[in-house]
Length: 395
Ligand code: NAD
Ligand code: NA
Image (cartoon, rainbow, N blue to C red):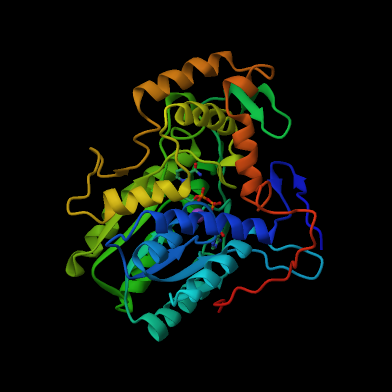
């Protein structure tokens, strides 16, 4: 069929297999151009199909020749209906990995469930024996708790009072004020339950119990801090409470891994256009200004550049540098004073009329559609494309 982008709200409900393949090949080529990393050899990536998780899987496989198992939650294709982009990304990734003799298998299902954990355990036992790294990169709006069966929803709300600021609808370019009402009831608890560290810890506990973690095992989960501008809705909002919990959980997990000299890290990453960040109010305006400033300063990075730096300059060197709270920082360039001062100044001036020149609205828009395999110059979108594509190593 001929596949075109169709948007609903801030998301795109179609995706293009050729464009997703392009995106994956670009990331693989980037990693190959950087040479070998003395990194992990057998890796489980939870949230492996898009964003930072996909970049981690690609960096593991093509940077240090690692066998990878990927876990994700994606919509399979059907006749006349495209899959979600993470499905096509994974199909392209596995095809390339297998061509080079690199082991890659995947599990599509709810990572929060006991069933998917058990399925993953069985696959590791059968194929890999032990693993030396787990990347935890889930971003989900909901979690069904495996013991209580309760379904929790995460929210993106300020705490204590309503918050008013500018935002942009990046589809229309309209800059306007929005007011977000503060959290109420169980919003904080629910958000911590979905996006905090409990599930990460459950994964590591379950794997350790089965003796599937090798000595010197490492695990990393991803967090975000960001500037004052977005603090009320991000770091000091409901999602920030979940990130506080995730960051604390790293220490609990490290304690539980003492006997195998294992270590759990949180890496604070840069703000990037992903399916998750597009859904957060105010953040798209911030990102479009940030991109402009970082590109002009020559320090812009996407997911793959970020994760390459995480592996080669943080995780797999002798003394992993940490901040005063024990976290890895690869948001260091985003948070540089000169970058933040420029963004803050532009923020004041940004209007519907001025944003296209003040900010990188076009870059934002292109990257957003790239997430779904659209707007790649190398792809001819007028051609018919097969929509039903298999993931070769899907279990
Ligand atoms: P993303 O939406 O691109 O990726 C989310 C992944 O989780 C996908 O692979 C998806 O399939 C998987 N997933 C979601 N629900 C699942 C479920 N129930 N079971 C199995 N898999 C499931 O998101 P992302 O932006 O790459 O975010 C990953 C992590 O990085 C998050 O913790 C996020 O907070 C963090 N982070 C993001 C940014 C940013 O700007 N995007 C910045 C810093 C940190
Ligand atoms: Na991810």
